[in-house]
Image 1 (cartoon, rainbow, N blue to C red):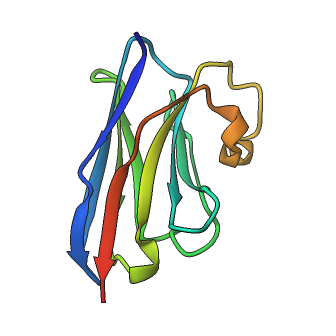
Image 2: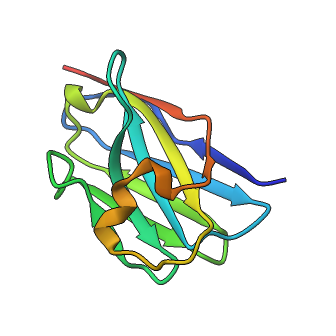
Image 3: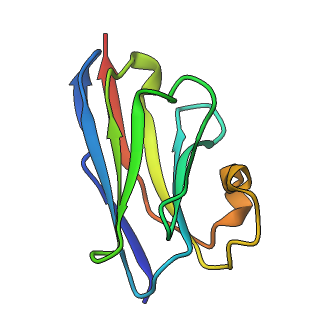
Amino acid sequence: QVQLVESGGGLVQAGGSLRLSCAASGRTFSAMGWFRQAPGTEREFVAAITWTGGTTYDTGSVKGRFTISRDNTKNTVHLQMNNLKPEDTAVYYCAGRTARLNLLLRDLSGMSQYSYWGRGTQVTVSS
C-alpha cells in the first residue's frame, strides 16, 4: 500500500520556522512536491524535488524562505520553512510522482503531475 504521511505542522509566530516532513512508503517516486491550501482558496504549488535532487519553487512569496530536500535512503522529503508569515497559514500537502521525469522542472508545479497525495498537515502562523 502506497502512503504519504506528512508531519511537522503546528502553530508558530510570524518570523519563526517549521520543518515539515513527508514519509513515503510502498514505492519510490521520481519526484515529490509540496502544495498548500488555505481556507477558501485553491491548492497551490510550493516546491518540488526530483529523485536526483533537482528543485523548483513557487516564484512568488516562498522562494528564498522555503527549502525542499530529500533523503532517498529514507524515502522522505522535507520542507524547511523560515521567516514564516501569516499568509503562509494553510494545510500543507505532500505529493508523489510515479511517472518518468520527461518534463521540465517547472512543470512539476502542476497538480496533475502527481499520482499520490498525503492527507496534509496544518501550519498556522500567528501575527
